[in-house]
Image: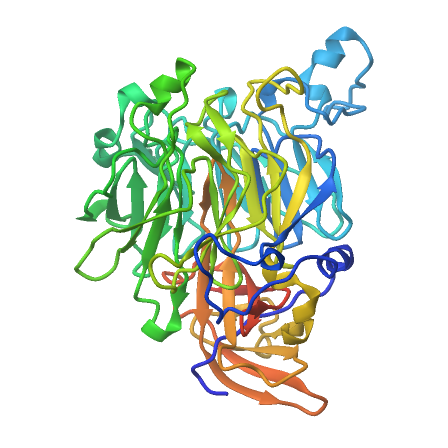
Length: 572
């Protein structure tokens, strides 16, 4: 097995998850073609109900490197379903009418432990409603913005083993109010760029590069703002190109921006078809997996779904217009740029797009008509779509098994290390409302189990994956260096063995901020005594290609992924 092979890692400690997984539906080899709209029933995945009540709506969700999931909502939506015995200042919450209505007697953030399937409450000091986030290189979640007093807040959550950690509110503030803004971790120095927001046509950095640094005007945000449609450029799509520049997409337009020099490098053609893609039209976007075979130089983005012109005004009048079915793909590197368009099996908005360990794209959650906002959408999209990027045009989409639980506005989804997709949230109401509305507040927690997790393919799955750093570097691997990956396999590895790494995103409002997958080069691979396979894998060459931090490493054998293991890349 030579340098042309990819690598990835496995994940050991999820006993409950493993039990659930091996009692689920089947999957296909990555080499098999899928015909649009036609997948056999056993290849459509399966839905599992994990909890009947998470206590809070998962408006925002993020997976930590401690294998826990943060979920949090706005604090201003009234009492959640997770009542506390004491306020976080220690004062007891009684059964009085005032205390029953006091939001500080209720949790608005929880941490979900994957292996135990349990949650614990967390405290929030300010309102993170419609905020943004990025993981820093040490695994800490940097979380910024929100509503009211929270609109300029900077919050941190560093996960821990003893489950005693909690949110920490910074004494510093953002330069501008950031409500419906987007974040992207930049290469080097744990610096995050925060772009846009309601009535914020600027960007800024956290931390600041100098004591007096403020926000910077971005004319692109002025140009893409649609005053009569609620903006249509809020929560802009941000993707880090492999040259360190930032791709910014808002409404229908996009630019490549140099954050070091504060200048626009190039302006891309407008995506075809009418309709907008960003909030409140709320389509979604991913950067397709980067590959060592082209030295990570081909960077391609994909945008799917959104709302038709007039959808925002129509929804406010009680009319719900059909959403967009179109997707566009464009290579943002090189000198020739063109959107290549194709259609999903149906219209979709408020949808999440996640990159699976197989490099396929899962499109999940959302609605078919309307737009984002309070009760602005109808006709839930219950069937996920699977997109296979390298199939022929017309054969890339397939329809998966439907859920029975609508996931509308304020729902979210994330990929777990065991290969499942965690799905939670949905609350198009301005308070927790459980009856007499079109779509009640949703507190049930589900897992979508993709087809590749079926136990019939267990003998194809790499087992017991481990990561081995160089001697004296037990805290991570430097960019451009090699590290070891070990695993067991019941059979000879396929020619399509891959080692993929995945940066877990911060997800909210149909955006998976900082989501990123890379296919790594396997330098050597050998079978040791007893059948264990040892591979030598090459780390990404620079922070431009893969910003420092924790990634999930997955070994994929003939389309079947291992459980993922965490690997940390650090600046050289």
